[in-house]
Structures are given as C-alpha cells and as structure tokens.
Image (cartoon, rainbow, N blue to C red; front, side):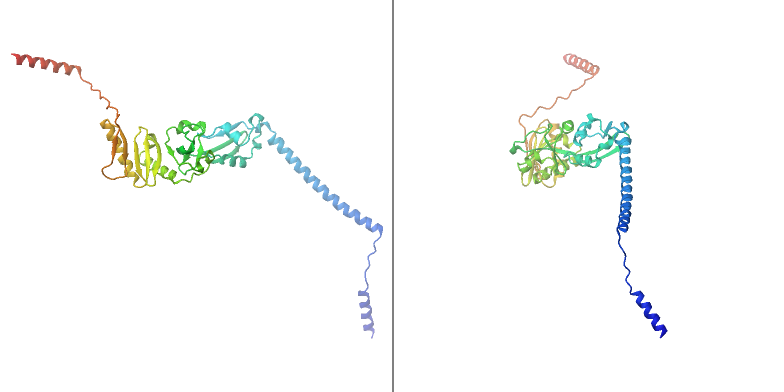
Length: 328
C-alpha cells in the first residue's frame, strides 16, 4: 500500500505545469541581448565592407590609377584590313584620355573586332605593364563582286565589294586596295544581296558558287591564274563566260574544268607563238574547239638577230672573189 501511494505522488508532480513569468525587467534584458547580437553582426558587416573598400581602393591606386599601367602600345599583327588607330576606334578606346590598360574590357573588345566583316577571328590580351596585344585573322578575298543590273559597278576601289572563297562579302578597306587590284571580277544578277548591306553576309547565289569554283580550279592548275583572269559571269545554266586581261572570251562548262583550263592555256600559248590573238574560244567540246581570231591582232614582235661583223665581212669578201672568178 505504501509503494502505491509513493508512485501516485510522483505521477502528480510530473503533471505540474511549469509557468515562466514574464516581467518588464526580463523583457528588457532579452531586448538588450538581441540588440547586442545585431550590433555584433553589423560590426562584422561593416568590417568586411571596409576591407572590400580598402581592397578596391588599393586596386585603383595600384592598377587603374597607376601611371605605370597606362596604355602605351597597341601591338597589332601585320594585316591588310585594319591598323592600330582603327582598332582603338572599334573597341572604344580614347587614346587622347591616356586610359589605363585595365579600362579595356578584353572580352567585349574581342567580340567587337570579330564582328567586322573583313575579319574572321581576333584575340586580345593585356601584357603588363602598358601593352595591348591584338591578333586578327583577315578574310582572304578571291574576287570582286559587281551587280550591273543594280547599278553597282564600282570595283577595284576602296568601298567596292570583295568576296572570299566561302561567299562572304565585305567592303574593301583603303589599306587592302594594293593587294586586291589584280583579283578577277564576278558579275552577278541583281538580287537582295546586291545592296551594300550584303557586307558581312554570305551571298547565297548559285552563280557565285560556280564562278568561285572555276577560279579555284584555275589556281590549282596555274598558280598565276589570278593574274590573267579579268572577269567571270554565268552565261546560262550550263556555262560560264571568262574574259582574260587580253580580252579573250572563253566559254567553260560547269564540269570537266581541268581539261578546259589546260586547253585554254595551250590555245593562248599557241596563239602567242604564232602572233595572233584569240577573240573567243568555246572550251566545252573535247575535240575541234571553236575559235575566232581577232581581226586587229597585233603583228608578231620582230626577233632581233645579232650578226658577227667579222664573219659578215669574210662572207662579203668571198662573194666578191666568186664574182671576179665568174667574170674571168
């Protein structure tokens, strides 16, 4: 009976509710504790901000505002399409303001150069303490483009439209004129691509692809092919018309071009050795190639003959002696 009463009292004590008394003093002490924690956190944030500001100011003084890191040199690789002044203009550098090397956003500047139609690739690096190294890969032109029907006839001059082997067009810069004057001209029919806005875009015309393929085939056979081609146009769906710098018109088929190129070279060489000029030649037939000769062909150049004077005098004396013997 005694054990049962003791267990009952223990159970009653466990069911007693614990009540926490909230007084103004206790509330104030709790607020002070919270405010203290908040103050500590604010101090930590302030210290971190001060450290960040100090690092930033240190970088400003050590790098951005350090005269030793002012941009002094733009190291640009040799190329025919862009110079140092234009590089600075394109990537937004004001050279007169004597900017810091770290003011140049290298990533953005690289993309700006790559966006130029005459450049296929670009790379920019900072080289301490004062040099911006710029490397560009210029587009390699294969021909001039002329759209006669659209009134775009200006070629072989700055601003004229050049095209590379992939059919991407761009306007010829002043600095590239000297290296492109001997390139052939491709005449194309007028389309939407006939506008100057075509610069930087691929010209999607089958006539251009056929003309570029013929130029490539000629250069594979003759390394100097670019020197004697004046212009190319697609005459119809099955043939191309090429005009040489001497004014000879040669008709090519769209296939079997290596044979046709060899036949043209042989015909021109033969005409040169015989002293006449071919006005037109149809290279599509394999045999009996049709040729017309220019009527105002220039006469063959006289070949100078050097005669030994001693031998000439001996022959003259021999003729005189023979004549005297005959009279006797």
